[in-house]
Image (cartoon, rainbow over all chains, first blue to last red; front, side, top):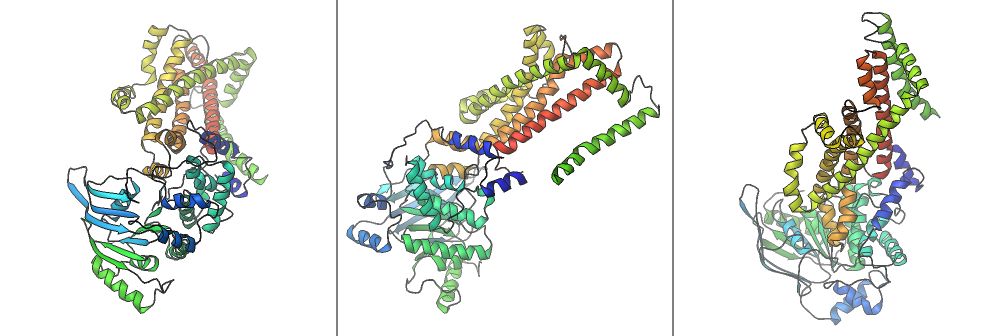
Length: 329
Length: 252
């Protein structure tokens, strides 16, 4: 155990090498392999990607100005559209539970939307439906005008639990979506390098997930989700398992990534101050069944928001009341 | 160097202590030395068996049986596990059968195997492969069924198809379970080996034990037991060594 740990750190493959080599070769076992330079485009692949087709993908996430200009140039409906969305399911004992009831919500490109609510209010259910992991029982769900059917790389997901593949290096984890899209090895390498820089972890590509701290793992998970240039980034309480200090530093980093990429983000949390600090818009869901009780757009003038400012605290009080819990921190 | 000393101390000293205690116990002559031989007697019996060559031939014959049976059983176990965990019709049809077979010990199958395959090598392969198969099948099936959902979801949202996801996510994610099953299967192949060799064999460690029983040569029996212990422990540590490297991310 100690042996393989130290080997991983130094990047010396002599000891544990054959296992690593085995899985690297095993991962190449790909009956559908298309190793060419034209990335496959999914039917619903990211709007931004199709736009940037004409320009070129190399400037990884485009400057905010370019994005804004493009968004203005292309009129259209909202990016994500939920109409009368309902999800019910049966427990093992046969009880019928309505997790989400009649939710209508439109999210525009570039927004940072927090879904805020008490535990078990169905906010994760809503996110899972947008991700395509769950199908709506009733209602409509569209991304860029097209109905959502199942998961797709046009929606990147960052999970609450650590979801990095433990048998792959950080590099291979981030490159996974690019490999699936059939990108060539050189281009994958360049993209992975840029993504690692973006999340501020330029030197850990050769390490394995078990060698990283919880905060680093989630930053790598963000990089992996961004790799396929998704139209929207879905985040399901990604910082809930981290300690308070790491959480705040990751919140700042995520905000930084959002300002640089202007990626549309749908972020689920039960932490009020996290929601206020991060979002451009907060959607509050009530307890089961989840319904929208508040939809607040926040002013963009005072970024980063000071957690000690009076406005921050006023909003905090208001949200706490809307949720029905006093000071849920 | 220091590390090596510690490992030597941890591995050798306890065994030396046990042998010393055993020798002391035998020297007290509480029990008849014919029934409870001292380490020295066992050592001389082993020397005799080495000179006549039976020690090596037995070990080789037994190892070949265990290896062949293990290979057949493990291959079938992994393949069947893949099928029953992924294809519903196989799990409905086969799981009840395997669950009924699992409590049946390998030794109970020896008479059947002798009738079916005669007293040749096939009956031994059959008995060993049977017990290895069930152990490997169970852990493969279990490991594949319990691949964390989050890996599947992550792979799907990154664009993996079902076929790819099987090779690139399901198999590596269940590899620790499959490997644990293989290791357990290797130990079982030794257990069932002795059962298979007790009847209808003319060589092998199990046969030699049975032969020694007929002549009441307890010292030769002990040689056989030590041989089984040493071979089994060596095999197991080889599996551990491979496992540490193959599923290197499992820091158990």
